Image (cartoon, rainbow, N blue to C red; front, side, top):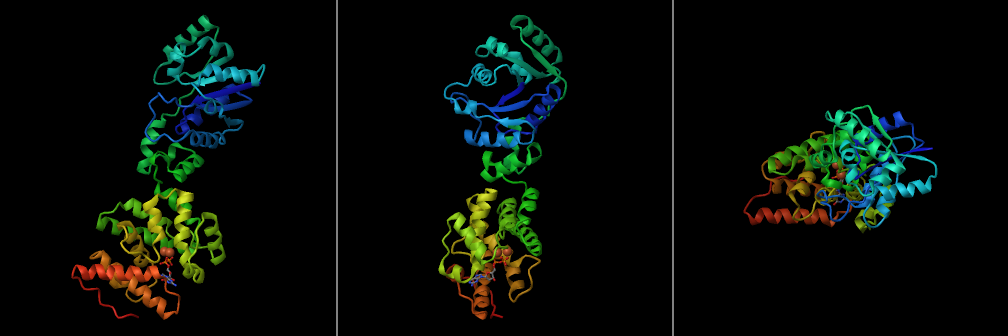
Length: 401
Ligand code: DGI
Ligand code: FE
Ligand code: FE
């Protein structure tokens, strides 16, 4: 039996890791491949925002899932004290008697292995595998391999193949800029976004694809329109256009669910519907959408709040909340309704006046259809009416439908 062992911080595991393992596995044909995330010792400088060990293990397990016969092992993370490779190999040697252990490493690791803890134990218990072509180090690697063979009786496999040029540091730097997805497996990327590890923000194309899958096909146009309008309003009023787009893409993500479906989502996320929401299940999609977006897509507080308040609004909304509240109402694909044009114009001239009129129009709509009026809608109207009055502005004239 042959076991390929690949250790590292996997912070996060990326396609470079996967390609290295695949190339090594193709050459060495192991029966089992173990990815072993290393415990990062407390004295070592932790990369900014390094997620807890459990997250690294979970990501490594997702990455391992891409490779046949490959598993993630928690044996180093579960151990207390310094994580020595020699100890890991001892344990594996006992667990798999008679197996050939092959330790896959990067070039610089091979060059420094003699400075490691118990190098002679490492080389007695395991063969070493290293890539030959890494930044023109071929001669150095060949010389070092020869030296280790002579001095320790080491078995060194020098593998052909160019490792993918990407580092975890690079990936961590890209993720907060809505980039980096191309360096990760889909599962690992989804996990990072769901938990917003490394300050990651989703690539919007990726988010659209996933969010649209939650919609009735007929609603996609509305969400596209809302995104475009939210972006335009964000540019006009100085909010982050990508954050506005993110909130807009997700704002109706639970709209498809009927009343029973809404109540099931409420149960799942511990939402207690109020009596107006119980009467009119339609109102619930704002609360359930916010919870779903946070749980499934890691939507951070300000974005989840913009989703939460997009239907009724609330007094003293944040800029992002106001933008999404209005964008939803005035996007280009909205079926025309009275006051639409007036709100649309106002939204680019006076955000509070537009908000007041938008809430006033909903009040009229609800009254006309004899729907239960949600007090949040009424409060939104009152708050923005008073805000206009306080600064001596006149509400936009509109007499109702
Ligand atoms: O989800 P959308 O259709 O894109 O838009 P939305 O989230 O603004 O939801 C619109 C619906 O919400 C619309 O049918 C009116 C309803 N609504 C908004 N405020 C109230 C309200 N319904 C009631 N009963 N009471 C309200 O205060
Ligand atoms: Fe909605
Ligand atoms: Fe909407």
